[in-house]
Image (tube, rainbow, N blue to C red; front, side, top):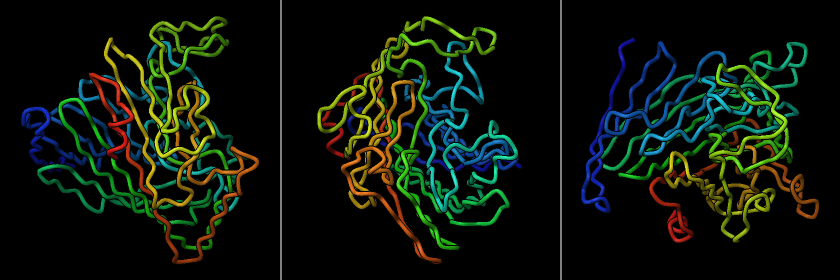
Length: 334
């Protein structure tokens, strides 16, 4: 199918009215929508048959630096070989009616698949642009292993940017077809699996890809170029952010000799606000609105029940900055 292109001019006052052009290019044959700034790929909304959920992948900074891991779709040398369900930027959860939507991937044996759920892209509902942003609105279904629909999913992505910043505002509305029960679980909710540079240095043995793409056990981890560090709005840093409620968590590192920050910002309208951080040093960066007691035994247990026809909405903002690290003052504006 011929690609459909929607474009708009964005005037960036802070950058002296530099005018990047933003385009959405839909390619149904390739099962994706490319998001372009000035003719360069920022990210793609992809929904291939071999993934158990739609994702944004890959994702780049405004200067063209990867922020997402390549494995398992496009492996790069020296990447970790783990968690094949960690692809790009995604949204799902580990316990809906007892089904695990989070961990499902090609690695799950066939006899185990009935315990897992999938999110299946249904259609592109809307693509449009204005002078300041581009909107992509899509529909999907949360299904069990037999294809029975538990939830319908309507998600909007708003893409904005300037000379050294990219912003993704994601709003997902889930509507129950049958009764849907969300039970306190650490596996959720909005997440990014980041490039190696953004991991925290580690001296533990692990499995990485060699220069030929072959998984290789490495006894002493090579931390060259690995310098990621988390912090949250309470001032906690590195591994201390894990499991803590936070309005935002920011991950910063130097990649290709350039300062880069990635932040996930929660919104006070969300159930479970502020989200608990499910951010790990090995490269998983997630914010979980539906995990509570699982992170803190003294916290109340999260429990959400949607009756047929009832809906719940979640809104998150992802900010990607290159050229300088995001400050607390920057993130207070979102």
